[in-house]
Image (cartoon, rainbow, N blue to C red; front, side):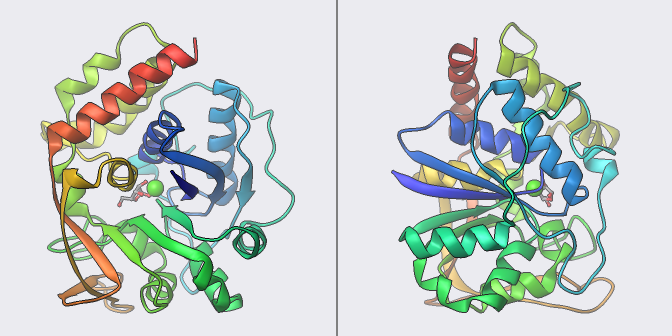
Length: 305
Ligand code: RIB
Ligand code: CA
């Protein structure tokens, strides 16, 4: 059993990752959500996770994090996630509200009480960068950060960088230099463990959660369809699948550095293989990944009738 905090900017793929975690309460104890500006503004991504909690009638504490990167300006991504950050599903609300303390304050408090927590970071790393600047001693209480981010060959937001790292490269550099054990799922392994567009048709069926996932994919897959692709990555799903079934992935250890400047290189991650604190996921068993994801949604359809 791992106690996890999910740092997130929902985000279609964030929600699919969170649903998959929710489907495995015996393996992952989901303590809280910490939101951060990324795919959309802080208010929009926070409203999105609260709307999902309303839809499922669940109560996991939500803490609002940083509303802009350490140095750069916000750069939301409506092309990938829409103006709301989660276009597609028509969800009312939210009725539920975020907690009153900030995500960074919450991290300081929870990490001083709980030992050996895993942080699953599915968004720009601004919350963690801010936390480590203000209270570097908390790193002793973090067992591991498992994050979606980075790229080994080519980027998705500029020639070499992946969005989560690019949006706040300074925060990412603070985390990678902190000495905390970090496991990274870069773009390449997310595509290797991706979903075929025809597989998304399985969600067009009865089921409260299947309907939500279908509506999410109906918007999210437009990006792949417009480019003539027959599959797409559900990026943020990979860190959760890694925690659930590590042997689905091949990995290497080494050091990761982050470039802070340059039109094509800002946010680029440079991986040098060596004995080190960082683990990089290199490849994935796609069928195995999809089986866990599909079974998770099936199970949630049963649970949330
Ligand atoms: O580059 C993919 C990442 O950017 C994912 O976390 C997705 O949600 C977006 O935030
Ligand atoms: Ca995300």
